[in-house]
Length: 208
Image (cartoon, rainbow, N blue to C red; front, side, top):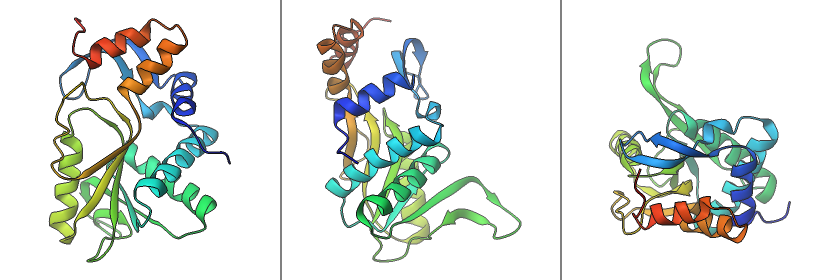
C-alpha cells in the first residue's frame, strides 16, 4: 500500500463524515464549531485505512514499540486496526492491550485485556483525538501505576488543540496523524470556507 499522506487522511475524515461542522460541546466542556468523531469509522475498509495510517506513523515515530495500549472505548478498535496493519506492513510482532472501565469479576477477571505490560516493554498509547489531554493522562497513570512501567509516547489521529495550548501530557512524546492547521490548510486549498473557520478557531478567534 502506498504511504498515506496527511491530505489523504483529512480527505478520508471528510468522506467518512468523521469531521462534522456545527455547534458542539466537547467532553472537556469546551465549545467547538466542528467535531471529529472516530466512532464513525466502523466499516472494515475504513478501519483498515486508519490502521494503515497509524502503523506507518508509529513506525516513523516509535519504531521500536512492543505494545499498543488503547483506552476504552475508541482506543480499543484503533489499537486492533493498527496492530493488524503493522503485521501486514512490516512483518513484525506487536501486541495490544486495553483496560476496562470497570473490573470484570468473572472469567479472567481484572481491569486489563491483552498483553499485560512488564518492565522493559516499550508501550505507546493510541487514541482518537487530543483536545486537553485529560483522558490520556488518566490512562497513562493507570498503566504506569499498575505495571510500574513508563509510557514511551502517545499517538492520536488528530491533535485538535488551539494555538499555544498545553497538551497536559508533560514530557511524554506526542505524535498525531494530522493537526488542526493541516486540516484548515487542506480545506482552504479546496476553497472550503470551513478552512478559515478552523484556522480562526486554532488561533482562538472563533466566537460561538
